[in-house]
Image (cartoon, rainbow, N blue to C red):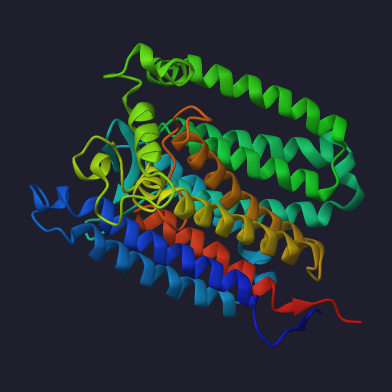
Length: 368
């Protein structure tokens, strides 16, 4: 039985709180101007909701920080089954469609994205199952194939919404967890090649994904269509200079040139209003989060805790890398938010739930 530490990882906690604080400020700065007009008619509309999301997420994080992580093992199959049912339900008439994607279930007083819950449930179940495999993880049929099937099923359901970015994040997280569990590098290399092929196939089987990919390669070819997001994102970043234009003074975000400014492209707003320094600060905070997270994984008291911590950190890291890569035109547009920073309730709450589990793991050490 692990021995409890006196307190959770303080550096990780402060890092997350700083990212949340930056997110609240930037959500307000990026949305206040156009929120004054219908249908919102209130410049504080997004700010109020993001504050509520943050307070709810922090409360969940504190609860999970006090909940013994090993108790999640017994709930892992139930949580996975519940997540699968919700992913199926979102594709039925119970699901709500926005901007051409059916990713939400609306319960009247609030709506949520089952895919965000599914990511965490898959990580918990994968960690619990892999920790029991032992040396069997080096056997493809027993130690690898079940998790590939699991990732493929959940990624397929998420892809049907459609949500390519979240599907890639989920599969990538499982891939990293397999690496941490000791799967052969040759097996991982083969999986990586097949995975890359599957991503390419997913891109070219849908017209809008193909258009986004081709626009990524040459956005100037269609500057008012498929290339609009990329070009305006780059102009926002470039116009910020070293110190930025100042909070609320970003021309691209303020005058509606930059699409999805408070969600997918909030990092472009940070680059414009806080400049190169502000953008680097956010990146450094994510690097600090990844460092502390993997340090917790390495020093965890048992295999389940180690794999669970690695999975939670990997999911956040991949999502941040993809989002920043899209905004800087290093990756094609996938429609994925920046963890802790972008506007959104479901993503923030379930990400902070995972952080709470991570902080709980940091409270335990292996008995001597």
